[in-house]
Length: 324
Image 1 (cartoon, rainbow, N blue to C red):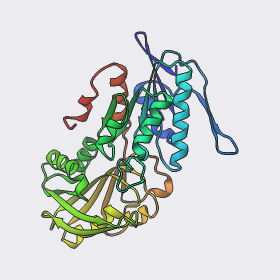
Image 2 (image 1 turned 90 degrees about the vertical axis):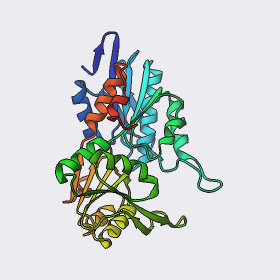
Image 3 (image 1 turned 120 degrees about the vertical axis):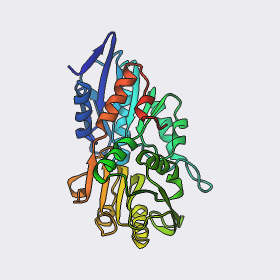
Image 4 (image 1 turned 135 degrees about the vertical axis):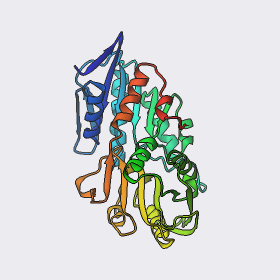
């Protein structure tokens, strides 16, 4: 069966083509199967989808990971939502573990878009009733969508793994910039560790290039855990790691939710500045992006529990483990 019954309600899990491994794991944990769907690209790049069984009256969850090419994955998900809406699905929840365009959440200068708001509007226009995502780049994105938003946190998963593997006696949690201080502070509370902060300046005319200016906190001889929501080209995180090394850090561990890993991220993270990299599988990580220092934790249990909670009309907040 592709549809799971709960009284008169029916749950359907639909998945785009970007990350089939994650979708399969979530389906297994839910005790269901992914609804059959035909999907292909026309010669000019247009995307076609068609669901191969009735979805009338279902509670549909549309999963898509927005890896490169991001725009193709986004368009496919929007078309899936539209297809479900036109096929009379009762409720449609977008499950977007890595929210696309999340870094463009405000105007830095005049004549710039707020692309994250546009994405939320597109989801709504396509027919989505609810949005679910993991570790939004900015919490304010929750207010961009006109409907319920379930903002899930990977912090407990990542922090508990760090504590299990490295203990907590000699840890220092490090925020790589001022924007991550609040999250790093929660990490520090959970691990019972002190907090350090790296102050950086970014040249607005040179994207993905970072200059580290100052380190605040005690890191000498300690196991430093650099925490961030995503790793793209790894410029920020490796510059921070080098600053920690320069200040006598004994070990540098990088922990992040979203492994974007745009080039040259793998080369940078493989350098001597970093000892371990811990991420989740919100995005697919191809074989050529794997390296010896990398550990990938599955986000599927968290997402599957959230889907079950929404379907059964239970509280999703309880999954945040006290951190909201």
